Image (cartoon, rainbow over all chains, first blue to last red; front, top):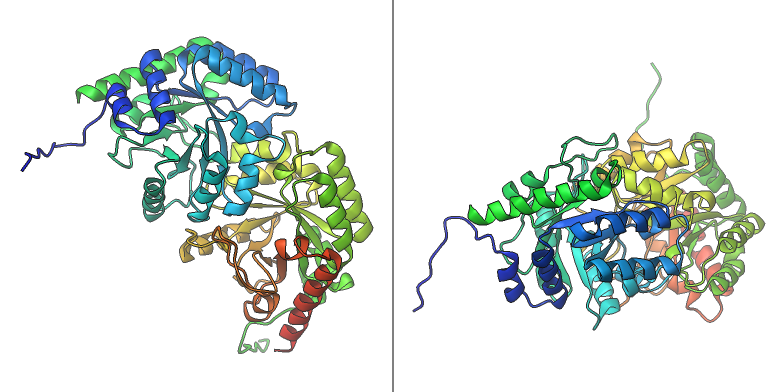
Length: 267
Length: 267
């Protein structure tokens, strides 16, 4: 019989170890970028002007592994925007994550993901989805992604005050994700939810100065998120694009979050 | 002391009684349309071509009190589309309900509702929202609607298989709605959730032949929804637009659902 050693606390895998362990090509690609650029920072580009958005993304590009968009808040959107974003992604090496938060029945999300003006599946490497409507939502989205290198994150926890994602809700979401590991590449959560190295954990609501906004958003620091809560990636928005120097600020977040990751490997 | 009589079962109010009881101007307007046109039918216009959508809406216009749209599945959307839909709404007297199913934090849904290419708040009388992210989502949406005659439905129940809306989730959603009665005009649900005549109940997944699709959608008949489950409005999509004669079929649904309402008044 093989000798099984039980570690005293769950192992924190390095990005390189995980890259060799995971099956999903998109997760592999992301881990490669994270390790090469030494970054676990996702930039949440919540800007409403396409020009301002692309400018900000270009400034922070060297420090991020992924940009998170809300295509439906851009006032002057055009198909050119997607092409420009894609070209910035190629130039700086980062993935594109459209934060659509799908939350409808399978038949509807299929059209929302694959069709419409935005054609999200054409340009977004990653999208996210709530598990609230049941397994049909993942089945619907998966049909659109099909043979393309596309991934989806399930929203297992939220950072907003008074949210209704209970412990059992989170658990069911993680189980749903595990049943669809060919498409679900990880979770939006406030801490690590599974020790399976296949799944990446993305934590939103991150700010170096942990405060909140006046509409129920509650912030966490990069160190708290990565070192204490064992998440993998921090999502930072207003902390960067509302700063005087987004490029320098992005670098500060990249350094803080990556240092927290390196320290967590030594724990 | 006034004499209080306790009815043996909750009272079913007529549309006319409710019109005189409710405060929200949009609910009043909807009830007036329902009573005038003798219809509690909402047409779910899930079509992806703007021309086909407007054509179908024009055909079923006389039989509906509301049209439900998914603006983000329309491939050839333009601002003209909203203007054309608005003009059909004026001509046939029905309200427009964009089935956006908001499900993000307050700060984000504000931009999604008020901004972007679609400018949903400009043309949609009604939108809907999940309560999942907590009270901030309603507060965010409300800020956009402000002094305009706009209403929102909270999704308290879903018809898809294996959905995660628990009994306590539904209860908390109804309570959230009651705290924002100046904006929340009712609920998306599978049956009546409150006897407060202020709130209208809208039930999706309705089909004269109660079957399902192959992605977890489960259907109910208009009679079951209105008479047994005491909901107020039926939402019918594929049952109408996939039929050979959408106009005649819409009329069939309008008659069936309205007859069920009239019979429920006599119970």
